Image (cartoon, rainbow, N blue to C red; front, side):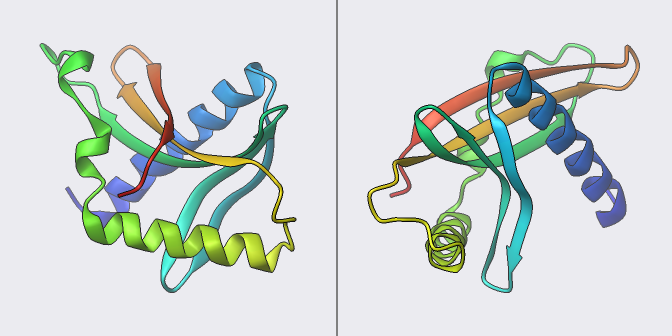
Length: 129
């Protein structure tokens, strides 16, 4: 898949994730916080604190079972390291107080372009090890 096509799918997935989060009472604080050593797809906030959300989007294929896809499997060591560094930088850049609660979530977005539908599965409060 060409990189531009992959980026387009990622952007669509992030947009659906933002709508999903807003519908559940989250405020979108920032999108695509980018440093040369990492990126945070979405920073959102709710009553529990800040949420750093990694969005994993893919297109739905006939016969594909959502339960078969585990987005955390795509969180390779280098991606975890980059995300960790980006979060640390974000907290410093935005002068977030040390006592602020935060967590890392993964949004798995399944895009069905044929039916013009999307399905989102959230994995909340993951631990980067």
